[in-house]
Length: 254
Image (cartoon, rainbow, N blue to C red):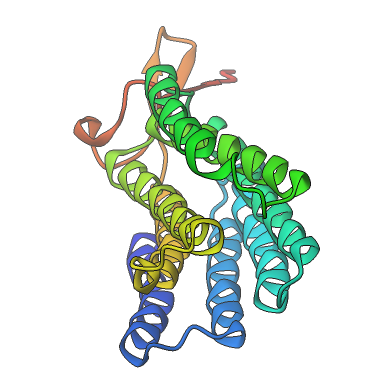
């Protein structure tokens, strides 16, 4: 039943995202409705799953930060201050993502070095020289950029079953792509990728919800290790489990 719900529940926000894509409507109310739907689904799955971890609650909290961030960005007008506040809340979202990923894996250092270097080159060449971009905004964007790189690098190093690991990576990559199109639009005034900005953002939110549902759907079972310990692994078989996903727990034998 749990595994069935893990596949069915994400179809709700997915349907909402597809309808928005078809109608071409991405207003504030629709966006918040999608975020709240993902939040309720993930929170419900966490409460339902007895083997969930406290770190899993970072994802519902991340949706809260998304709602706060969009509240500023959708209503900012021409205010740089509100834009910075919006970035700050989305930085908190990435911080939640990073801690969640780190609790389930490790940072892939080589990917992190390469990807961060590429985005720093973009920042140094295209954003840093901009005269119309205030210093506070540049600092906020730089911090956000570094957090984004850290989050994706940690997602690459996840030690989870391959399906949810792949979906987590896609979700964060889509979020970074959406953020990049925003920087193209807001700072460089290059708007050819604007049509992808909101769809990639929506599907990032949906994929994060889907990945968490898949993660929580795996009923752990115990395998003997060294006679006095047990290993807790998912029921999907060792072919789908990365090398670090085995959690050793104490076995109190009478």
